[in-house]
Image (cartoon, one colour):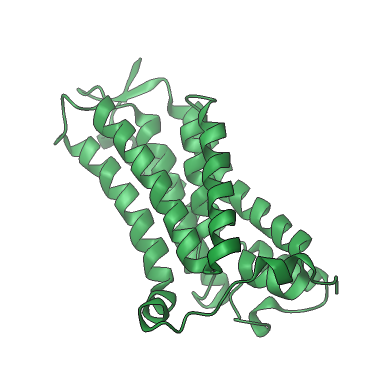
Length: 241
């Protein structure tokens, strides 16, 4: 393993943050709806995300949007893994790719939720966060691909039967977060309070703050018993526009 000096390579973090933020700013829901000569931000809930795309265009278009957003969150993390997996932070045993994967991810999600290209009004970032976790876990151990499928299937089943899309999505993000958090705790159990390991946990916390914060209105409605139902049954039968 080679050593990575943060003092000498800080500019890489700045460059990565800018590039990943701009990647996050590209909204697939907007692009797909415009290709269909419509504007998803003026339809349904107005949210340019998977659920609203499913409601307005049907299950296939919604699934396409979901896959694109998953890749948006996952591909930068995968690139970061291969670029930095051979490095340790100077004087530590902390693998640089552990940090960089989630550093990339946080900035992609910030761009997705607060895109400068759309007056800082974007989607809620769930699919991209799920893609980030799914790829980040699977790039080290391929069997995590199966875990990811189980989480996604569990989320879909929860939404199908309970009809609460926001809650199902947030529970899926939480499941991935706990899994990755446990791995980091075990991996770095000998240096739990090292500055770099603390940063790892803060990045995971930041992803949850972003996800739950973007759903603050949904959470208020949930507690008030006024949250809108998400009927996947109706979406399956939604006709193409």
